[in-house]
Length: 65
Image 1 (tube, rainbow, N blue to C red):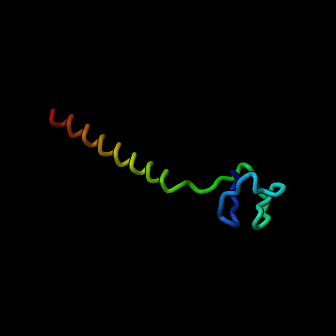
Image 2: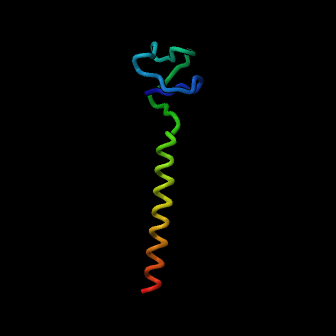
Image 3: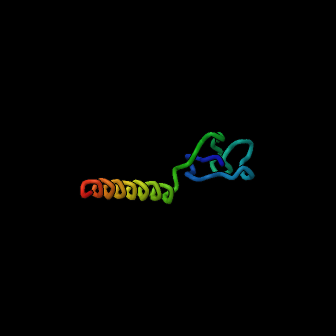
């Protein structure tokens, strides 16, 4: 789905008029992408925190054995 920077929204392919945004008539390309969803960013951050904790636990376990 193309992203319109002017309207700050995704434009459905059926709504496009000759490759332009139906609201502001900005020329859109198929390679344009919108921002990452907050859920995806949250998932990445949670994964990093989890893996960091597991690495800490592994190092701690190695030191005690």
